Amino acid sequence: MTSLCRLAALALAAVLGGAATAAAAGDLILTGAKPDKLYVIDAASRTIRRELRIPGANGLVGSIVPSPDGRIAYAVINRMESIVGVDLASGKIVFRADFSSPTERVKDFFAFALTPDGKELVAYLVPVRLLPSEYQVEQPRFEVFRTNAGLKARPVRHFEAPRRVHMLLMRPDGQSFYALGFDLYEYAMKDGKLLGTRGIQNWQLPGHSQPDLLAFWPVTEPTGVFTSPLYAEAPQDGKPVPTTALMSLDLKSGALDYRDFEPLSALIFSTVLSPDRKYAYGVYSTLTKVDVEGRKLAARVPLDHTYYAVNVSTDGREIYTGGAMCDVGFYDAVTLERRGNLKLPGCADQALASLRVIAAR
Image 1 (cartoon, rainbow, N blue to C red):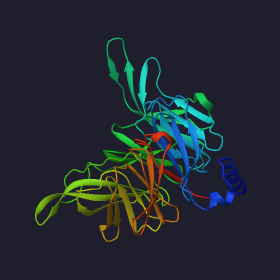
Image 2: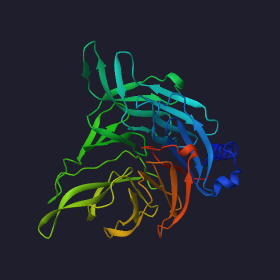
Image 3: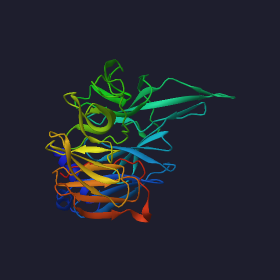
Image 4: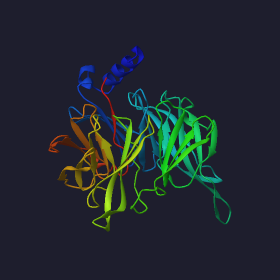
């Protein structure tokens, strides 16, 4: 770690209301909530370090992507028509890109990513031309912004994008990014050149039907691997059976893998991979632990309500659950026993907000 990173981490810990040693004891969790809140949570003490307000959020704080140095959180807001960058130490808005104009309504369906140096942000945009008597559907596009562009950021370049994309994931070298939707695309960051396409809905997996997935939570920490439940009919005793598979994408190597592990029953939304890559954890109305190598269910416990988002501590010892309602849960990664629960002030609804983890430094 560079001296600059150490100083930034110490400054963040001090300003957020705790000593540097307290911050080093555990992770910081980021989550958003309606109508305009961004929360910084101390995972070790199960307390809120900061409650930050985002002006102009307009009822939505959606996908959250922390900057590589952990100092800024970027979030989709304003009915998916804007992205902001929030300085976590001061609460100041340091970046804002508004996509719509009087003649065009433009939505970012939760899909954006940052380069590893934190200098550029790429967003997936779906525009509609506003004509006097009709809405004219336009071609989706990627737009690239400089993160130092301030509060009226304009794209420095743009290029054509496919339809039906709902997540962008940056590769570690920053030279290209993945666009996840009905298929998996890879684009060059510099000029938008399509580098490759691999099937998701258009996969060729023997005996399986066309799959489906719901992936709005761009969690890749701490492994650099994105995972998601995926559903298809698969052969079992000679008959097609609705089956849940675990899809994984290693952002560095590009390896894409699918592993059937149980009949379709309980796991619907997001998953996260443990630091040792041996287990995946997923949520909905239960908390699920999957043995990745064994392709089987390792453990499952009921939850008191539905959760949409899940993440894991950087040491792999705890599982964090959020989204859907107004609390963040803390669970033992081995036993899935509940260790704690934190209610957000005023029972603020997290809805589809990401649950991100910033490693203690």
